[in-house]
Amino acid sequence: MNMASAWIGFFAAAVVLQSTAHPAVAEDPIDAVLEAFTSHDLVAIGEGNHNNEQGHAFRLALIRDARFAEKVNDIVVEFGNFRYQSVVDRFVSGEDVSDVDLRRVWQDTTQATTIWDVPIYEEFFRAVRSVNARLRPERRLRVLLGDPPIDWDEIRTREDMGKWLAAQGGPATRDEHPAAVIRSEVLAKHRRALIVYGDMHLQRKNLLSNYDMEPPSARTLVSALESDGHSKVFTIWTNTNRDLTELQPDIASWQRPSLTLLKGTTLGATDFAWYYPGTPPRVSFDVPHPSPVPASEWRTLRMDEQFDALLHLGSPAGITLSRLSSILCSIPGYIDMRVRRLAFGPPGVTADNLKQLCSGQQ
Image (spheres, helix red, strand yellow):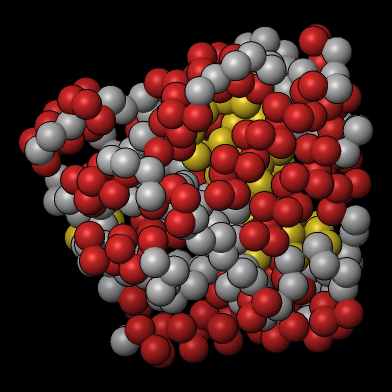
C-alpha cells in the first residue's frame, strides 16, 4: 500500500467512525480552560503551528483574565531553557533583568534554529510579568522552563551534542525533562499548571511510533506524566492545519477562537492522523536501529483518545506567523551565534535561510 492509498483508507475509516458521533459544540475558550482546572491540576494546550499569532493572542487573553491566577499557579513552557529558571523567576516577579540575560532564556534552548526568536515568545514572558505586577505575591504566576538545561558554551561539535544527549538520557529528554519538572515543582507542591507545548508532545500515544508506547523513546510529555496511573492531564489540540468544515460544515459559523470537547463528537471520532499535516513515516522503536512501519500496518486512533478538547482559531488560511524582527537581527553577534548553531539543526536550514528571514523575505 502506498502513502496515497493509506491516506484514503484512513479518511474512509474516519467517515465510518463519524456515523455514530454527534456534532461538536463550540464553547467560550477561556471559560472552558478555566473549567478544566476544576477537575484537573494540569491542563496542556498545544501551540498549533509554532509561531502562530492567533494562538499566542488567545494565550495572552487567557493569562490576563482575572480568574486565571485564582485557579492556576504555574505555566510550563517549551520555549525556555531550564538552565535559566532563576532568571525567569526574577523577571516575572518584577526584578530587574537585563535584555541580554533575558534573551538567553529562549535563544539558548536545545532548538538550534530561530523557532523561539520571533517576538511573540518574549512578549509572553513580559505579559506574565505585567499580570504579576497587579497580583499579591502569594498569587503571582510562576513560569517553569521545560527545555533541558543545555549549555551551548560547551557544545562545539556534533560529538559534543551526542555526549550531552547521552548524559541526559537521549533524545527523549525533551519530554522526560519537563515531566520531571512538573512532578517536582507542580504536583509535589499541590499546585496547578497550564502547560504550553507543541501539540505532538501532548499526544497520549505517539503517532510516529505507530501508537506503540512500549519503547521508552516513544513516550511523550503527557504519556510520561500519566504513566503513574494517578496524574491526569486535560489536553487541548490547537488546530492550525486542517479545515474543520470538511468534517462539520457548521464550524464555519463558530466564534474565533472557540474550544470544543471532543469525546463522542464528529471531530473526536475522526482518525488522529487526519489532523496532522502531511503523511509522516512511522517507525518501529523497539529495535536497536529503528525501522519503517509499512503503510499497510499503520494503526488508526480516534482523536478523542488522543486529546480531550480542540481549540479552533479559524480557517487555516487565516493563520499568520510571527517573524524575526530587524532589531534582533541587528544585535551584534546574533547572526553569528545562530549560524554556528544551525549546524546542529534540521537539514535544509542554512545561513542563507537566516539572512532571508532577517531581511523579511520568508
